[in-house]
Image (tube, rainbow, N blue to C red):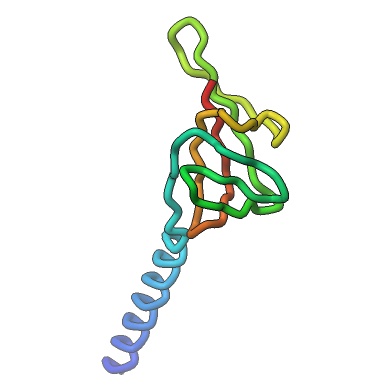
Length: 100
């Protein structure tokens, strides 16, 4: 009976660890700079080419009266020359933040 209890506890621990690890498996990084090019589902930032996910989210961050405000945007809000933050896993972008 005691052996069964230990096995159940061990399985619960392994399952809990697996779920926690899956939650942090994204491993994304933010890349920042001046956008050089955008088109054909690709963005070039600091000479590096990134691929845009079809579901890429765009956020426009603007400063008004000393405070920053964010609102949802679209790819039409992103232009070469904009200062951007790209949230990417490897070279695949899931979010673009445009700073104005």
